[in-house]
Image 1 (cartoon, rainbow, N blue to C red):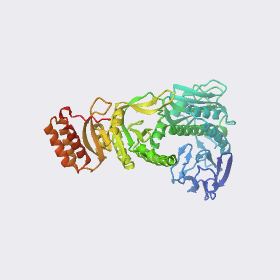
Image 2: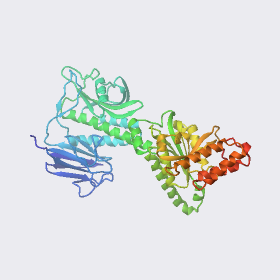
Image 3: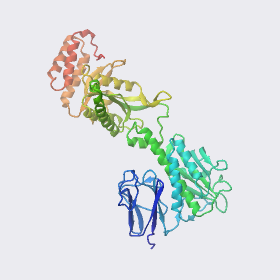
Image 4: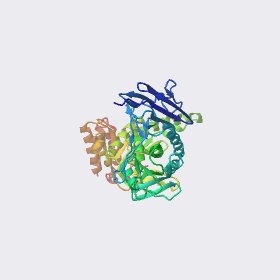
Length: 559
């Protein structure tokens, strides 16, 4: 049985590097703490970031719960779970910190993935030289990190491939592929026109995040488009998608089998992973101002650039919140404005968390309020219930607030001018939710959370809140009446009292003479001590008694 090999660990950060040799039975910790085996004085590295040890003839790496995480070949490692290491593994310990593992006594040759084809045969090759590979990787990482757009990331990645001296790369390209027959060239570096092996692209698209390798056999080329002076081709597709297809890095080289070919294969895969990570970070940053981190990560992976799309109709629930008494709150001497601002920011932080916890989107802050939406940019069946759950939490965060909610089809996408746009929603649902928030004032309907039947009739919403019927309302500025409810925590009213409230609200709508209005006012007044909704009904019926002929059953609150 083969003994565990001795390994050399190469670590590089900034313009510094360090290597250590580990034998079976030894272990090492890499981190920011000065007691670490390898101390890396970089803020993003945790005090104890990773541990390397040998267990039953296998070398392992364990992420010790680091903040920045650890990636191997671009893929994240689980925290506190040992993962087996292999010769040539590349570890990322955060931005600009790389480690490469070298087995100084190879346990065996490495089998590279190749296409199963009669004209091609898998080749057993020697391991890469980690020190030389690390130098190229760090240069590529710096070049990719300088890009500010997705296109520039891939342009810099292709350039990094072409500029890596000593790896035998003849041509390097960044391409987008819908399939092997539909390829768009983003960037091409080399002294000949861009041509590609269809088989290499097909294999990469079938197995993303793995580098497809093809070599020229004695019988002929690996693919019909492999150039006459090329000996092998490597292609790496990412799992990231975009509206224009999948991004790939493609390179061809002239060297025959040997260590340079191994460098070539590893390097293409590493640079593709670095570019993928950079794209993900860019996309998450773009979306994180609107949605929760989990939704931002999903959008980043799907490549859904909602800021560039034409607005589309989507099912959504809209929530408007307004703080009462804000004008008096900010009407303070200048030396107190900063404290008021900090207090407001604390409220907004808590409200944003409540919205994000329900996978909602913060559309905009409106001075002393917030406009949020649920079900966009990614749809989910629970968006109506999510909106009412968030509303209840928001009401607890800011007790002196009014909220309005509605759900239905909204136009969602970039809103504003061509030179300055932001994600937004447009339509009747948005207008109704905004008007309902305004109707919650004491002089109007005296309610904390007002919503439409679209919210109140939802089964998931009914599991989260109790809905007390207010009546048919024609909000100011809108033509059609809408059935309005007040959402309150579950159990606020016993079922019989909630049913009595609904019945009285309907009787008030049907009342057309003084006797009917008196009956409603009397019955509601008797229950006024149970809940303010009864008291409001009693006051409304009493007001209608002043001019019974003008009452048509529709509430039309004034401004």
